[in-house]
Amino acid sequence: MEDIFLQTIFLISRYLQDQKILDGVSFVVPAGRSVAIVGTSGSGKSTILRLLFRFFNTDSGAVNFFVSSGSSLIFYALIGDF
Image (cartoon, rainbow, N blue to C red; front, top):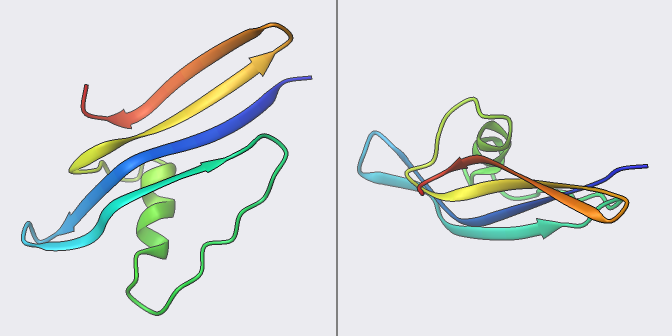
């Protein structure tokens, strides 16, 4: 069975070029775990989901998925500045 986990690194996303929606958001979701994203209206919850599902790109930072199958670890960089 494959284990998948998610890592975000210092996400920055802007709205209309000058207004930052996210500023340095980083987190890891381990394989088999759940996470809840909560906050007030306009705090960036929907923006985080849109970035994770690649509906739009970040201004900087990265979203990475890792898939572990047995003894191998496969890395997928979905969004980021390289």
